[in-house]
Image (cartoon, rainbow, N blue to C red; front, side, top):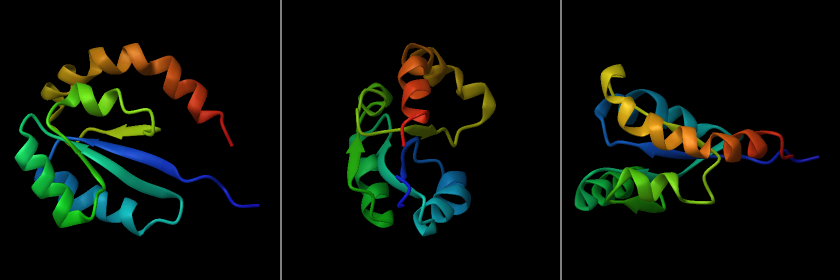
Length: 102
């Protein structure tokens, strides 16, 4: 039986994600990075192109509303997580349901 891969969205183009977490996700058989968002679309597109990520968004809200995303990684300093946290709370039930899917 093949397990479904977790489809990740990256909520920022911060270097810590690019250097540390995203390479591991890209190499994993159980994960795939499907989108990245930045407050600047050109920056998101450049980042996505460098890492082979299919979708780039010019707003965090657009990424959070993408129905193909199962999980979100926020490679920002902790004090900046609040920007996405309020929006994530709204989607919490969706993520909770998706986490139970095969």
